[in-house]
Image (tube, rainbow, N blue to C red; front, side, top):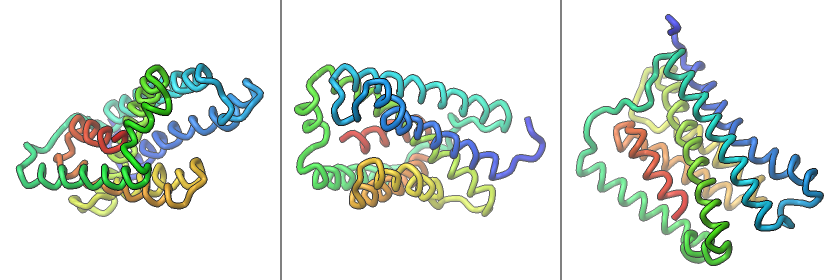
Length: 218
């Protein structure tokens, strides 16, 4: 373990998680179109499924590497928690989840889950939501390590720094990947809310992941 651990050490881990996530963009917009000879919008169902499988495996390896380095090199165990979540915290969590679902409903003109199931069909739906699961893992890592880095830099806790980092990375990148400023801004707002969730559950990574996945896919 390093004797002197800096905020930048954790910031780098969050950055690695984001860069790992961006491999999806390289696959979807550069590598796979060369292989298939057509843009992503023209892929067959099987080609989409292959993309989701390859990306999910890649993200799994990236997450494993980051978590291993975090614990071995910096002695930071992301599974550690800080006490039980209190009733008032659960109340805020539930309100935030409801607000998130409402924003998603307005953005999709309906429930995202049902809309995608109807659009994709059972097989594609299952593989896409596995893909979402691994995306949520990297979202959580960006959030956790972004939070940790700023807490060390500023020597202050109980502010969702991780949510800001997530908003500026995963959130705003949707402006380009979805070609929509509105989607980018809504994603950034959602990302900042994720940062609040992490603090509300007392940095419990398991609860954070479950809540974020619900907010992301519903």
